[in-house]
Image (tube, rainbow, N blue to C red; front, top):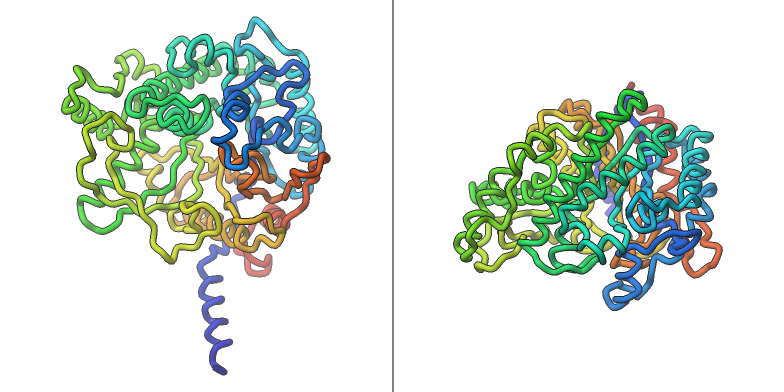
Length: 494
């Protein structure tokens, strides 16, 4: 027993040795994120229109874990100055936030502008500028104006490409002097597969393997429309960048077998390539096209359920991302599976089996594992697959099972994942330029309601004042920003 402390010390030392001691490059940006529908509240104040998530939460409370709504959320609509002060106090470089489409254009169309909504975001951007915090702004973070869903079936109608283009042009024109770091659509995979596929997310459309692919096509063309508008009308003046966010867990082959390696690659192409490949390489990934075409034929369809891009559209899509924006939180093992039943389904088309090792560390949902090596592998995959693009991590963070302020597990997660970023930069020459932690504070986590805790700051949702309460991880992240390093400053290497 006397040897135990030495043994523990050796383990601690070996773990410390795994943390990269290098300082982040001087140009590397560290920031935090959240999104309008999750923190703003003020859901019907000052002329804001209804969104599909407002309708979904109000009409289907049984689909929200705690039957809650985003009506008030963190009340950032009224407390944005306090939120920005927290970011300033942490010494961070940027804040990723979103514009609520329906707050500035209540019907979704540019013929009806809500001046109070425009003024709100003007004030937010002014506050950020005065505090030397760079805004990273998302145009669409899942909150489609409800009239567009009612009148045109939302993302399933190809006319939305031009409607979104008009909205993007309005935003670029209105806020272009305040913002030069743009994201068109956050996580189109979730929008399409959950919102227009399984129906688990707003607007609750069910049609997996058919409608989710139509959604994907329209979102990608809408993104390209916005990119071209910026490129042609605003880039020379505002010198900004525009991208679309992709999201996934890293898919690790379940074994060294060819079948498992192919399954892992197929999973990543269906999860990431479906949205990244068209904007970087011009078309759907080959494995996705082949799989959906083959299964569609066996299922009796006259043509593939995956709608093709024309040659003109391929040319229009290719090159419409100035950087690669990545949301990622975890890793899953992926193995080959027997051929799925011949019914239309995105999961059947992908046809893999996900699993996790029983000893993988987690503290919340079953898929939220603390495995930083997966991030490094993911970043290298993106580098190889898309010709070494600039990569920005636009979301990464850790969910805990309770709202404790002593969130050492979150600190462990951030330290490991940030170290993986340093490894990717210095050891693998990945062109990674920024990292954004999710989230600045606890929020309304969609169907998870207020039961998931991801914030550097706790929010007391039972208090009408919605106080922000600092967690231990906030001090850790502030220390990283100050020292530009993950270890004690005396141990850091320039």
